[in-house]
Each structure stands twice: as C-alpha cells, then as structure tokens.
Image (cartoon, rainbow, N blue to C red; front, side):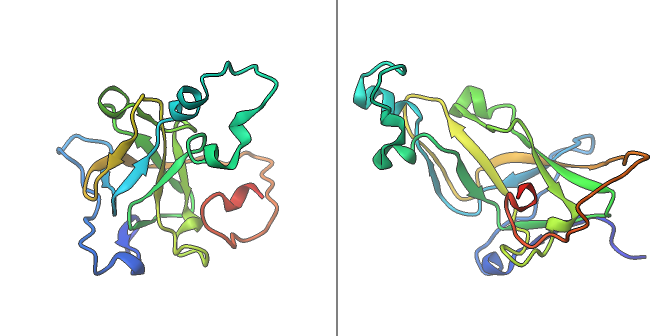
Length: 177
C-alpha cells in the first residue's frame, strides 16, 4: 500500500534535529508543529510607540524602510513538508495558547497547504507559519517551540470546475500570482 499523507523533513534541515509533527493525544485532530530555528517576531507597536504619532497623520511613517519589519508578518520555518492526496489540503492553525501567552496571531486566520506545494522547485515545500505580534514587546520563538497545528482535510470541487490549468512553479504564496 502506498503512503497517502504524511510528513518529511526538507533537505536543508535533515541534519538539524528537526522533529516530525505529532498528535498530542489519541483524539487530537491536529499535528503539532515546532519551529525549526529561533525567530524574532517583532511587536507591531514599536513603530507607533517610537513615533508617538496618530495613524491618520499626513506623514505616513508606516512605509519608512526602518519600520517595515515591524509592520509585516514573520515567517517561521518548520523544516517540514507534507504530502497528501490531490483532493486534500493541510490546514495550518495557530495554537490556542499563542494569542493569550505570546500575543501571536496568524494574520490570514488559517494557512492552506495545497497538495502540489509538496516538493515545489522554489522551497521543496517547506511549511512556514506566518505570525504577527500584537504585544508590546518583541517575542522570540525558540527552536523546538510548538507554534501551530496542521490538520489534513479533504475538499470538494464544483460541478463546473475551472482552473488556470497551470502547474505550480514556486513556493510560498505562488498560487496567487
């Protein structure tokens, strides 16, 4: 019997002690993902507190190069890729404790890993969790910290199915051309 769905470590992390996602209990729906390396998730408030200006000020300080890193998401690598059937996807969800304990949220609510993301030419299909830190202080995610969960789910196609017919060429965010 062939494998239908599962996880592998991407080549760049095979010698870096990355752990495969696991379910915490027999009844858990999600597989817990860990960070593959230390990552700083800067507070979005640094810009506001530093400038002490209202958001509607004529001088748009949010676009200043020095402030961009505080006003964008941080991608946290997992060192993991997922394979699955073509009519399935892996849904990425935040840990329920992240907003309360660490002030970290997924800006898109959930992440969607399509089956054709696996082994793509751009990043081998490495899964990243995208975070925004709404807390006052920067937050450091340490290698091995549990950062989110992945749930394999089937999906349905419409009767009058249409696609561009193109194959995925890139990695993260590449299907939204």
